[in-house]
Length: 573
Image (cartoon, rainbow, N blue to C red; front, side, top):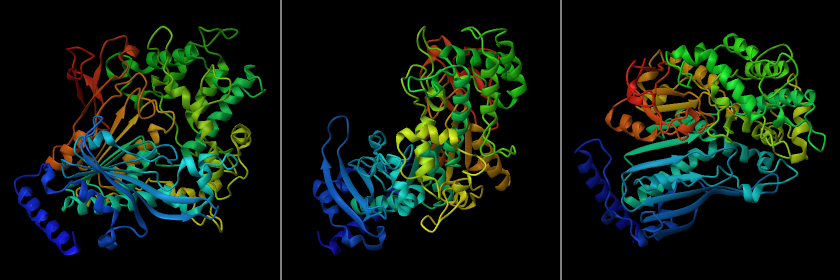
């Protein structure tokens, strides 16, 4: 097909789309007769006619039409990259992406965010099955190719300034533009609606799109957003110091002499803490049901009284908590500070989801996995400890070299909160943008996003030990104030009591935010609640449990009658 005939067919398809659009606001399915043939897919290896519609230095590595198989619908799969280059560290870099264009398209474009420090190609095939054109990226570095054991392992890309920028914000803008241009070229018409969804690092990317690139997406779901990256990982060094000290004072050591951080609290110990929090706060929402909906009222003084009631009167035994454990936990929940007591990151809510028991031998691993790690592992394996390499190499204006896995704990224990944190906010001749300026996504001015009628749904678990719910709530409340109290019109925040990081824990942690977001964007029906189910109801000794997730500041309240395990028995107020 020559360029003239290609443009003609695109124009004809657009005219047909406009006629369909006059019939209503719902996204229509574009039948395969409009495009989606193997030849049309293969033709996308030649993108010369797209010109400025694509980011500079975009390359299509393959464009293959895949017949329906293995539970996937027929679709065109495109693998490409942007700005392939050699970094200042001598490593090869490129912003890779994978775009899937289903044969029966619903005229929706969808991008999913990443996780951790990325480096793995995101490929949301589950959403493609629903008829969406889907795309994902590795954000400009490849864990398999760019990892270096002597430079922070997968954080080694932090030695290249451009790779930092791509991970911070550059990749998501360019991949979005490339994906939309290729989809339009293939289908002969643009998407009707575009959506972005992610949790954790992907949640940060989601907020990023609403703040830095508000023109790209009509609807955004941001789960547990790391909106003050890298302060969350930095706060992990604070908890590592605290719990390592507790382990050492308790005589808990690994064979190599390191403090056994995971043994600072056993699973039964955390269950004692959970029960103390429940005793202090469970009934504050009007129903003692193993879930604390009224987290703002669950204050440290309330919890402290019950923790002290569970304190050992003598030596530590499995049935009580030591005074040192209680004191350490209180310091951890108060948040990281410098020596003058100035807060460096948020405090943490007292949510009982830090513990939980789902069977006689199974305990909730979610909370402890981040702060202290396993009690039975032969090495210290807390996830926060694993992220220390990123603090040392990626998020610093003065990267530490060399830095190996063995350096993580010594670096953490020696970290000076009066001096080292400045490197997050600092610059250097090589790294002219600070980590804070690149990675923070805490702007409260969402006027451009609101002005283009964008819709945002944010969710966060109360027992998230990776990113503090309190930090996200402060941002949301600040944004609401900046927007004149109008946040509910376009952006809603949903607290998930008991949920750990993105999922898990004694909570109703299984829910779909995308479907109500689509309804809000396309039909104007705002989500006054989202029904959530417990993926592990045995935490509550029941066969099933559901609850409404309510838009902040509303909370779920029992109606006074009906099954307490049924969402229909609750309302948001």
